[in-house]
Image (cartoon, rainbow, N blue to C red; front, side, top):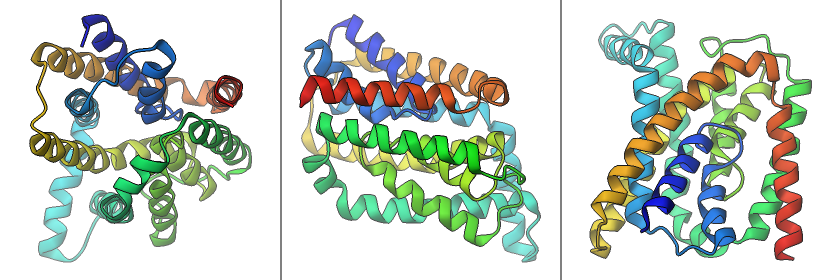
Length: 265
């Protein structure tokens, strides 16, 4: 892989993983639109580990507190709000993990086309707009309850379809069940830790089985740049969210979807 390709794709992954615009769609589309060869499984593994590093580093204090409280709750059977949030993240990951194991190959085979991405980009962009306008936005991530966690968890399953956006669909669901914007985004980002870890481990297993040649320079570039760009993206997204809302991302998704229909129909 050329160095320029590695730099561009690492930045694309880092900047789109946590914005509600679908990183998987952009990693599929950028090589197609620019006429590049597919970046390969090894590079996908690298940039996933990069973005995982970023979200763990950014939420390190929250994750540490959640882990300590969760372990303590196993002993005392009396979970505090940190432990409850940890349980919400763990339970909220189960539907995604099971569905991914059962249907990953079918999704990869049948749903990676530009027209599927165009459709989901527009559809879930409109859903994000509706949730941002109509959501009550009165709750934080510590006050969700079982049914709200379940709603976000099952919405996250839809992110297996390219173009949906894992962060986009979980933020949408969070807004629809009453979370405010920052709380919906934070819960989405906490959910991303096990989600990205599972994806990276699954891809690593496939990489080992495929015995693919590894371009270590590109891998290092991918990890470093995706981690840095993802960390900055999380920081500024949360900082600016109350000022800009979801409308800029909705508009971007609608424009991208229309452009894809024009190019590929």
